[in-house]
Image 1 (tube, rainbow, N blue to C red):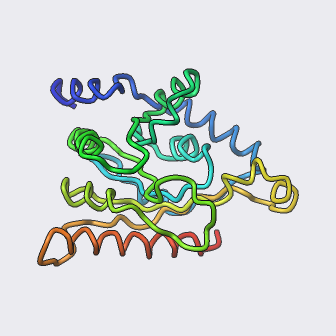
Image 2 (image 1 turned 90 degrees about the vertical axis):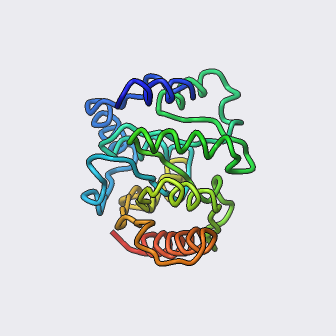
Length: 221
């Protein structure tokens, strides 16, 4: 990463976003104990280098830590600014690469921050549902993720997390044998879609991402 890109990232308050391998391994050990094991699929789909967007469903406030533990890259997260009100929690999630954005979703400033990270060849995690949904009956994704992907010609790597919310649920804690799993899908390449307009391009990417996340969530590992 050149000095210019480093300075740009420091301007968005993430100057020391490093997730060392030993820390990731330690967190995975803790997750194994806490969840009585875990399962993963598609880890090989994670790009070893270059920029990409992780698109994940969102079940628990532990999801960013879980993703950080299993993805062998330094990560950045776009998180609603309300999460930064508590000083200690703000320090923790900032260390994990969290960047505050408006609750309503992607503003111009959010797009600029996300684009800076992607131009710096880094990994950006987005929870496109816009938060933790009250029900899993249907998936509605915010369009900001497809806009970031198409603007920066950046692949999206879909991932389905299951069971991250079971740690605080007595019923599932007592009944599920393996409560945590991560299912990584194939990357969605934005320039592989033939379109006539930018809006059509974003719409196709969002539709494909929605279908892929639902498919990953339905698979049993």
